[in-house]
Image (cartoon, rainbow, N blue to C red; front, side, top):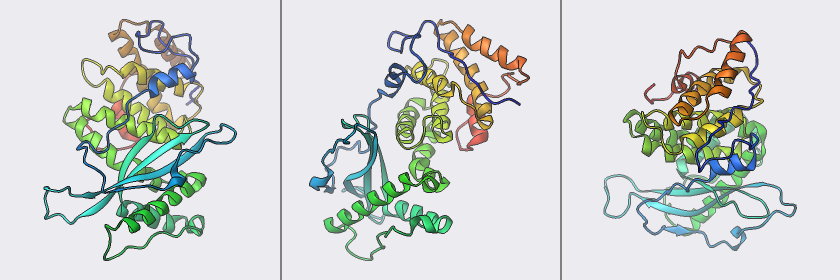
Length: 325
């Protein structure tokens, strides 16, 4: 088996709203076209937040040299269940976490997820067991029996959660842990996979896009978590007989991210991705030859390129979940 050494595999006739075929892989044009997606609305009810941060220190601060800086901020919190909802459920606080990658300008495509105190606590406890020395300097807020909904407690916890996540992101061992990845995406992936099971791809895709936006800020472009979520996006966009309108955008980005990748473990994803993109180009009336030529070249190198599994099946083998394969 050979390591993957992908070549340039962009179609000769992209759609009018896609990047130009002369753009180099990982060029700003390809990245911008793929990442120009609307932010996922975390609170579709539009109800006013129970708590909002008024900390002046959280105003945007450009980096001095224009370098990228990852920032975690909790600006809003809600009490759940909402008013007039099921009061039999014990009420709890939902923290809206915003993740940005700022530079000399503020990140205009932040990722947002909602988490409870128990989610942060579970992450802390898991990492404390696995990597205790890496968390020696972190003081995690204790559970309280009363006053959970006070503005003071929520503000205190929000600041502690931000410090905690920033510490994780700056520590390679903590950042690359399974526990952290689960914290970042498990709830959203579970919901997206349920939609895929129900053939409601149009509901799953925005969730997967937000997951990609989040992971893409925290991990390297060609890291396993980023490529997995990117391939899952391509699979979701191409699962229906009529591809989703953003299918080509994500397929182009996936191909560019796999370009020059040398990771034998991700080869099972790359071959189904090539087959998926070749079929998509055919559906769009575009030139498949660069992709089929690459498959032929890999076959000559002794790599089995037969399309024996779908892209979703290949993803499922690496990251088993509940979606239909």
